[in-house]
Amino acid sequence: MLRKATRRITLPIVLLLTALLATGVVTGTSLMPTSVALGPCLRDWTSPVSYRRRASPLATIRFRVSGTDALLCYGRPSLRERAAFGALVPYDSLWRLGANEPTRLSVNRPIRLGSLRLAPGRYSLYALPRPGHWSIFVSRSTQHWGNDLSPSVRAQEVGGIDVPALPLAQPVETLTATWQGADTAGTLSIAWDRTVAEIPISADP
Image: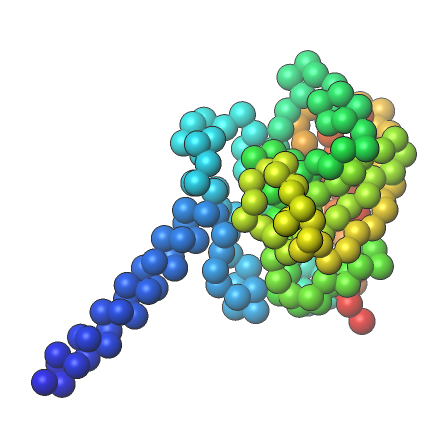
């Protein structure tokens, strides 16, 4: 009797955990709390793009600011003899800040992007590029696809900041995000073509 009762309790738990794991793998969204683990950068297998060889590979950046662990997941498009900003990525139009899945930022403790405070959690980042500066927006929506920046995605915005977009002497063929920082602050740079946008990130006091 005890074994049967144990099986009745155990089976639903196993099925639930399996369903949660499968959901995370399929949608590319980590279901584990950020306080436990930030999780890997996963593909969203609900899109047909994920079943073909990708022209824009998924990349990962991990960095740390004063005890806060951060993870950036982003797709890396290439120029391929095209112009990026003002052409492939029009000025004054919302852009996913990468390719394919939304660019996602996960943090396990409070952090600041410029003056914008982010609580622990997972977010998507997108941009409004303009000559000389970009507006960076942060949303709690992480399961939308790419440039599907619909009203429902924008309704989950936690805020935005303006950042400088500086000219580069040499073009960058493939979109590249880099982190340069000290213990309590640093800069997340997004470079592509002849432009680099610099996003200041600091510890939340």
